[in-house]
Image 1: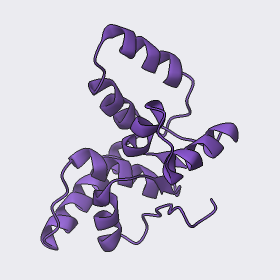
Image 2: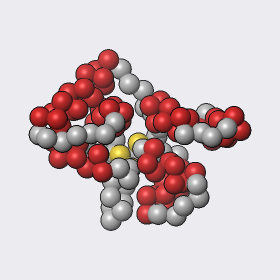
Image 3: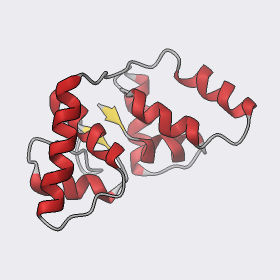
Amino acid sequence: MLVDTSVWIPWLLGRETPFTLQLDTLLDEANALLAPVILQELLQGARSKAEIRRLHDEFSDQPMLRAGDTTYWLAGELYARCRWQGITIRSPHDCLIAALAIEHDTPLLHEDRDFERIAEIEPGLRLWTPTETP
């Protein structure tokens, strides 16, 4: 399952939510996936070099979903399709993350309403909800 920044951050902060508990399970089963764009978002929030080192140690061995040319085409299309429906996605990174999940046919674990909005226009985006088992 691809795990969005919106779940990694509270997990790193030690917060217990249905989403971070699900992430714990995914990590125990070696089923949590990262993407370079998500790693970038996590690093952008670092407050010190020590925190950068901590993130490097935490995520250097994490399995990654990689984007190719078609991923960027799909991400741009998702953003445009949302805009055509009057939906404003706050970050184009979210469309890239959604495109990765769609292309790799993997569910997305998130706590970001923009993914709910993207899923309204793209049924191929599978979102995990706390009432489900993966």
